[in-house]
Every structure is written in structure tokens, then in C-alpha cells.
Image (cartoon, rainbow, N blue to C red; front, top):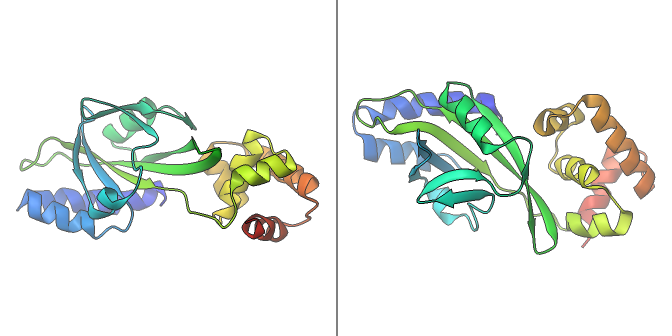
Length: 207
């Protein structure tokens, strides 16, 4: 989910807090298919939706201390401090976090947006959407070992498998489009493919 999509959710969430904070807020959050977590300004976890409660290893990419999120625990496009402060100051933003698990690399998209202070629930400050990695038929780790992808090439390839276009990949990973195209050229050379469609087909065919 893009940062721009957070704004209507955050706005509706703010409105819903006013008349009946608990019931209305939970109803709204549970209508979102992705895991959603509401944070206080001090980073305390205040609320989670049904999808968040059901997601396995939801907080795998976060470092927690006394119920507060303090950092990303894996490589990220930028530190949690930076994206959280931007959201707290009113700007919807996101980060991509690379998590290593059981010799497999996966990408988590974390999007944060501001919540205007409501009298009924003054602690609610930031809404966070967690987009866990899709489960492809083959693993990225297997392809890395087979073709010798670098970590940067693997991140580009994973987003390509997730149906992202080169400009979207550049935006997600905060790279120039020229750098993304260079990584794609390297991926084509290493896999013997010539087009993005062939590269994606190869990724989904590895068991």
C-alpha cells in the first residue's frame, strides 16, 4: 500500500475516534485487510486490527522495548526513527525492511501516516500499515545461491516478483531509476533472460 493511500484511512480513523473511540476505531481498523497498528507519540502500541493479531511474526522486523517500537531490527531503506518522526509531523511515509529468516530473504513494506489528535483518544498519533512479504512458489534465497545475485539485485528482484515496475522499485528502495535498470541488466545477464516477464516467470518457477 502506497503512502498516499494512508491519508484517507488516517483521516477516517481520526473521525471515528470522536464519538465512540474503542468500538468505532476497531470497526474501521478491522475493515482494512492488511495488518494495522496504532502507535502513540512515544511509540507505544495502542491498538491492532484483526489482521495484525492473525499475522505470524508480525513484529519480526521491529525491535521492541516495554511495549514500544524502538527500531527496525533488519536492513531498512531508512531508520525507524526517521519515518516515525515524519509521520508524527504530519507526512505519510514508508520504508522497506529486509528480513532474513531460515536462510531466506524477504521484504516487508512498512507505511506510516499521521492521526490528528482527537479529544476522545489523545494518545493516538500514528497509524502503521504492515505489508508482509508474499509467499512465492520459489524462494529468493534459492535464486541467490543459484545465480549469484548480490543483496541489492535480490531486493530489486523480490519487488519485481511482487509486480512492481522499475520506477516503483526505485521509489520503494530509494534508488535512482538508473541504478534499478543497472541491477535489472545484471539480473538478465546472470539468469540468461532478456525481458522482465521472463525474469518473473523464472522466479515463480523455482520450487
